[in-house]
Length: 266
Ligand SMILES: [Zn+2]
Image 1 (cartoon, helix red, strand yellow):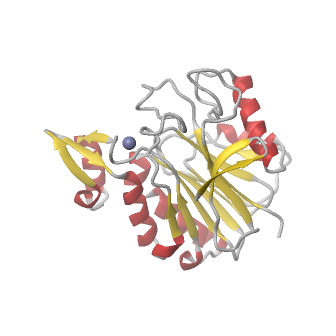
Image 2 (image 1 turned 180 degrees about the vertical axis):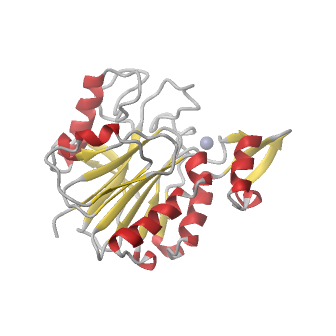
């Protein structure tokens, strides 16, 4: 992954093994139109930022990759484990904004799917052979619900994707350096039979530092992705104020960056 500036968008570029079949990356907070504390590329509709600023930012992102804002699909994220599958072309994708979901899969080209985050883990998946892509929102709840693995399973059942041929990118999120959690989070992991001790270390009475990207890497490997096919950013959004929004650091008053992916015409 490397920092890249494409037209007006500043983002972390992800290259998968079959270049040209898809474009994907993770936005930073730079070069948008929103004002503090949403400065400046706030792509989240659920914040207290002015709607016209968020819409302007979404247009900047879409236009940078040659599509209109109506072809940028995001959903109402709820920290749940529902998956939206888009398998046909739509005139306008804005109606998906009201659909509650935390992962999106599509086999349609020139439709950009995006997941908004400000601490949670954005995960991008691509089947370069079959032309199927996915974006996943995994905070501690989505991780405990194994949403990354469920999305891989849905790509397999809906589009016959072979997990061994999938590529994945785990984007910038809150790192174990800054992510202290308490008992209910630990309990959710234990309830899902996730190896808690492997992803956390004690940091005080009833407190732990949790490594969400490591847990999601493990889920993807468990779902059948080869280790070499999983890329991960090692950047903590909380540590990098100059580049990223962080809900925890900014006490809720902050914007959202986006993990985005789109199949280009073969
Ligand atoms: Zn950190």
